[in-house]
Image 1: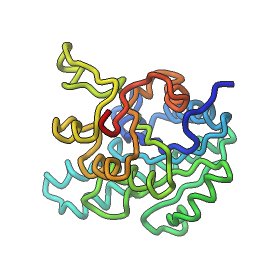
Image 2: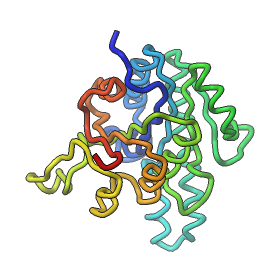
Image 3: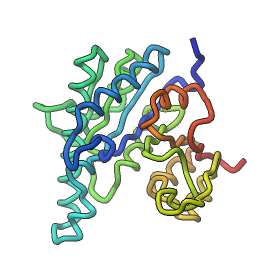
Amino acid sequence: MEEAAYKRVLLKLSGEFLLGSKPFGIDTDVLGYIADEIRSIMDMGIEIGIVIGGGNIYRGVEVSSRGIDRASADNMGMLATVMNSIAMESSFERVGIPVRVLCAVEMKRVVEFFIREKAIKYLADKKVVIFAGGTGNPFFTTDTAASLRALEIKADIILKATKVDGVYDMDPVVHKDAVKFRRISYNEVLSRNLRVMDATAISLCRDNNLPVIVFNLGKEGNIKNAVCGKDVGTIVGAEP
């Protein structure tokens, strides 16, 4: 069996990834694919937390630009992350993956409220913990929520799942001559404004020396490859 380089990880998923081939909502085939990828590292004894965005259903920043108050729009976006988290929980349960959803916004009859000690206990019991509701506050992205939760549960690394195979100096979809970084520092990400994660999220990681691997989730086996320390995507970390 391959040896894991990390014991506890935080996987950050964008809501857009859940779209799959759909223009809106959730593609259940994508949920099944993610469940299979997660199972492959659970079998290695890895403890896994997950933060999911809500952009496939609702994006607060975009809606606020069209006349809805930003705080209200962000609160609506938090609810979208809860919907995605419940969908993923159901998908995991269907294939026998033990899972709990903990939410930063209290809604007792739907999901459990986030308590740090409870999250750590669930992880130690080898349950996947899905963190819903962002940080529980408007004006913060789910990237920031991922950094915050990763630090709270003492994760070894953040796995930032995307549709591209790492961090580039330019958008590789638009610029065919874009150059990929194998490793890049937090400060360079911020100074170049590369939008790997938002500035608050990257700053949290930098200040607490929490590395981030940016990789392509669409390639089968990449979560396991990342956890095993293989050359997958781009590592964002301290200065070399």
